[in-house]
Image (cartoon, rainbow, N blue to C red; front, side, top):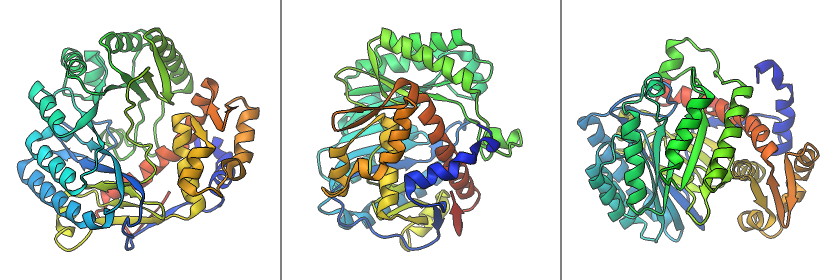
Length: 428
């Protein structure tokens, strides 16, 4: 979709959020996450031994000195939040990056601290790089309660991996999947990227077949996007987000459906397929969560906020207080819109879940009935007992609509925060 095609965007924004104005994050004091019934925890480890030029996430080259400052900051941040989450049921710990296992011993120290501070029984989920997950690392992750892992394979094709700037090859990638499946985790997800520059349909078929034949529990597939602030975007002087063609995405998604179903996986989110009976790996669909680390975000109901992206600024801030850079105050209707966004990503929503979050007087149909009726007319959504689900036709189009928000959110917020440690405001 070109910018000129987006005349509808303000109207969709108004229908979903109940407002015309765009959300604005400000440099202001963030409320504490007190009184939450349930929450997930997120830990961001912003270090890699190799910086992939297409990657939009906050990461820097690993050094022992920088990591030591980061680790000290994270321990301090955990201690700051511990009393404010007393009484909150922690349901997951998600660890992303960067490359979380770039320093396995240090990661284990942080995870043990989190487990001691928040001693509930909950799943641990971690992102892994194929080159940083030997058998000893997998064993140590088991020991600290990691139950679900996701491997950033991206491709098994050496030519395409070179284009992506990845530091592993296809042999290393497939060996990593094979060992992870044999290691006995509750869920092994494999990330694959498609619509890569010069990638053919046959090469995409080969990637899918290679991973699925090894018994991965879940695959998550993503088209490649070019962000102006990424190394690749700066090199190419991109002024706006670069997207693959819709025709290419649709053809590769159709093949993904076909191959996933042939291997007995069913679609569980817009870009993901899972084997029956296996635990779902997902990083971004929890409603309330608290983040630790540089660039970590928190959503606590009445506010969404993000830490400074700069590792040194993060560590320095924690000698005085909190490292929060920007805050978005969230009213009830905006929180409902946030909830709806991620239920659309998961392809279904039900009234009971909506009321569990917002109270017995809340109504999913009463709040969002107009927009869901429109999508039902367009055959993107169909009703089911107690709610609705997104159709296969709707999965493609609704996610393209979501991209106009998520990609611009990433570009505006993350792009600004990578340039400035303490920005004053960002309008999404």
